Image (cartoon, rainbow over all chains, first blue to last red; front, side, top):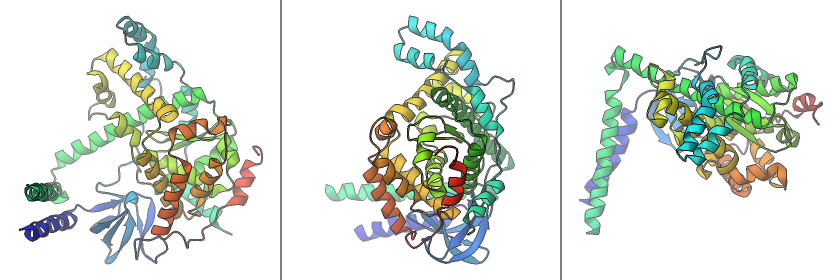
Length: 158
Length: 283
């Protein structure tokens, strides 16, 4: 009986890997390795959005099939859903919840204090110390994926 | 009795396993309706928008605590290195932004949505670009793994990310705002007082080192940098000691990772000369 259940258990686990959805490369570029190790040979290059067929999961590596080849890729660089496009939020004059929260903090703090929400009051009061202009400057500096990767690659050249 | 418990456990695992397999089959692309796909994409996008808005608010608080270090050339350099690493990470939906904090504290921070900070004190302690990449990669790891997002349950809804954030306090307008502020305060508490769990930090170390290897940097860079931070005593490392696992444990885990994942034999560059050329005004 025990043996039968163990067999069932093993079978169910194997079935999960076999029926898993396709995996999608999230990293802008990468490679499949011959073994689940970075010092093994590179089998084939992959790019963001490439669809991989999973074979098995071993530690932090997926064994996958792609373009007639089979190899290993770190789980970090793939996902079960296709890569999303870059998402941005409108930050112009449209006050988001974060700014509204800041503006209204003092009113709410007063009301909260009246109800005895002392720890919440302390947190809300702290929100006045926010430097959104510096965040805007961070947002304004845009480096494209390819620009960043090219810069890194340039640094590797002797 | 013992045997019965064992049998029950086995059956439960089998049922759960089979269920998960079925779920995969149900959501396979050829079974998906277009309307389902649209809702799913909208929901995902809404979650990301909520995350970015939340992350901006936390970033604004960090930048109020420590002013940004205004050196456009060095800031651009950090953004180029960080941007290149981020391109290799698992969240193409985010545009990462990097800044230097003008403090002698030795630390680095990240907020949901892709806002990453490294202190001037940390930069001064680094020896080369690979160490900078290791630290930025660790912070990208926190974002990639959505650790604060999950800890504080940040999500949007398909119609409006802000409506989703209202779940903090039941949905009414003012309570939603105060709840948002509370969540931002909690995130600050995590970053500066309580820290994430040890497992979260180890996971971010793993991401940082994996990104080093993927990008072609010396994969021992983060380990080398942590060994140096470990020796710094006093005020500059007060917060990092309080919010992170012991350095010896982190270094030991990194060494295990490097050996296990075939990184020991990789003799990738450290890119010291370029790092020094950007750091001339600082050091």
